[in-house]
Length: 194
Image 1 (cartoon, rainbow, N blue to C red):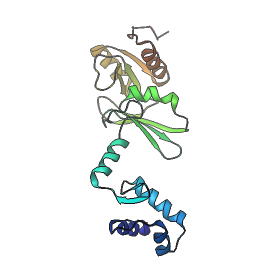
Image 2 (image 1 turned 180 degrees about the vertical axis):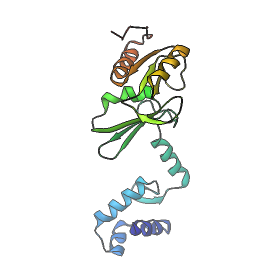
Image 3 (image 1 turned 135 degrees about the vertical axis):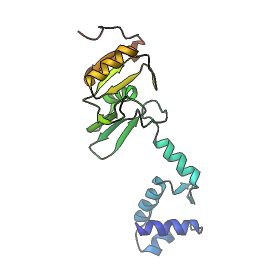
Image 4 (image 1 turned 120 degrees about the horizontal axis):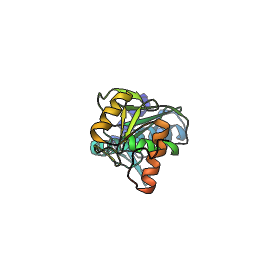
């Protein structure tokens, strides 16, 4: 919106008075507050103690980096392992890896439209609900116990044969990862496969 860019320019020039901004643009104070809120959300300004300041680039970069932290464990998200919940309201929730995504799944209140992650071997995007998960393998590229996603069941079993762990589909994987974290137990072959 052009008005927001003009407001940003005026703040850079030292304007602090929201009432003057509203008068200058011929809009209500609420409109100015909404514009300021959006500028702040974009990391372009900082509002504190009634003052308006232009955010320096480092603050904006820090906010962007903060937004790219795991919603479960707060580690920095790795694109190769990222697990994403696409909500019906258009928002996204990211976790650093399938381990955290599977743990967070039951806690999400908003309706989920889709879940995506990447195949551990090919890095191709895939549906999180149709993936096969190897839990508790010796390969732990992120959180432990590891949870790695595969698009093909055969690949998951080949990986399991080389690195250990067990293979589960989505629903069972969410239950098993909770049990593993709850009791801190080691995944035993056949324990969850009945």
